[in-house]
Image 1 (tube, rainbow, N blue to C red):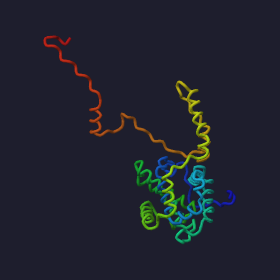
Image 2: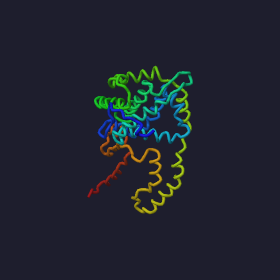
Image 3: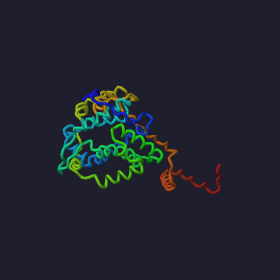
Image 4: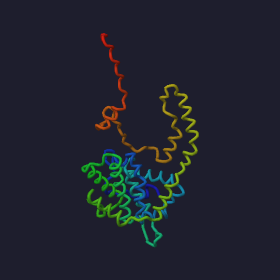
Length: 293
């Protein structure tokens, strides 16, 4: 399927550079909650059956990850609104043919409105949860704005407005009800948990270039001695990154480390620190009858 085969959806909006979506979806700490997000997605019976029967990710797990990242970068708008809308429309077109009967005899279709919304819902949940667990949380006013962007993106992905929660509070009620009443431990969930017990081998590109990359870094280090201010040779590493996530890197906010002298310390920590610092040696007492001068 080419871009010419897809008619972009005009509803909603694709996030842009000034959006909160870019700020939170581009946070590298999202990788720490990514596995939980995936498990939430496939725990839906329709999503689990579709992934298990149509994905083929077992044969090419790194390739599947790369294609997912490429698609996500596109519909989140990192490569422009036009490309984002085309990707949103392409996703709906691709999912039209994903259907069948699951292991319990239930018929399913990937464009089932509940399932399609659920996958998108885990995106908003993941952004907020990442900040709650590894940051300072998302303030209420900002969460409201982020939710508005999420709704606009849902419309751009072809999800109808009548299926969308009205606001963050309604979203939490919807999300909790889905976890409680609809999610299940299906074959795809069990498969992903089993796969986590065995480390995934590195991709072929990294395995092939690994020794060469080590030699290149060592050689570059020798050339840069004694100061070693040069950057290591990055040819193989750049090729691996391009193979996995494309040539453009999503913006990632940097964490600023507070200087040591400005970090707050409570009284107990300060007392412990004072006890461990070396104390100046006491001066010996002056002999009786002698002058201190």
